[in-house]
Image 1 (tube, one colour):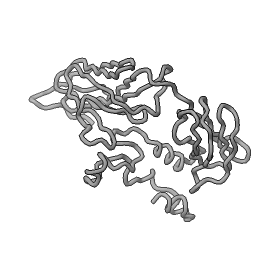
Image 2 (cartoon, rainbow, N blue to C red; image 1 turned 180 degrees about the vertical axis):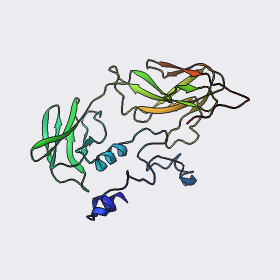
Image 3 (spheres, one colour; image 1 turned 60 degrees about the vertical axis):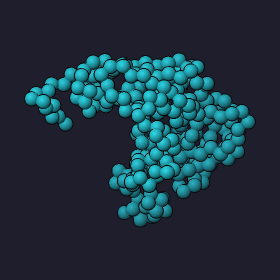
Image 4 (cartoon, rainbow, N blue to C red; image 1 turned 30 degrees about the vertical axis):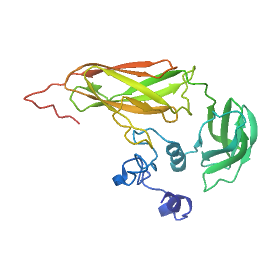
Length: 272
């Protein structure tokens, strides 16, 4: 749909979807069609817990009215790795790729209008950057760097604008990341993290792509160094503490306060 309406169709009436309408913006159950092969249909731009995938950033570039650029993937590989690096870019004449400040050439012919390919790029630890130019002027830049070995777990809570409400249905989401000594997410990490919950809460857990029965467990694998878990409030206010551990890594602990909610005649107050 996007290719036929935006990339290959020259009719201005078909130049862009309204706010980019997507059949599957989020990985989801898809009517049970993946019951024997996958936990969720994985063609979304974000995964089932709404963490952005590489496709999210590529479609952002493709839909942006302003110049934009994104290096696809990461820059943390084993020694002697040689691979094609792809860069999504728009509104430019060329994209130039640099590794540790050294130019590895320019690409002026994007595949399908947006993907600039750089084959046979040898991995060297450090920084890789991409610079998009239009008529000789820099219009967009992106840079990523090599990440060190996993050293610690990091927890980041997400609650609503009014905090976590002790109403029995509100949820706090936790981003669970494995990071290096400098606090940078390890993009190749994919291993188990164990959790403990204390306080007035109901553990809802998360899920792992391709691993059936991964929900509601007090453990979960990271995927590309990150995952997301959910904890639901009860009707009892108070501090909720989440602890995440893995052997060999510094553990993480985070606390969120479930705020009291007035209940009148057995009913919770209505609010948007």
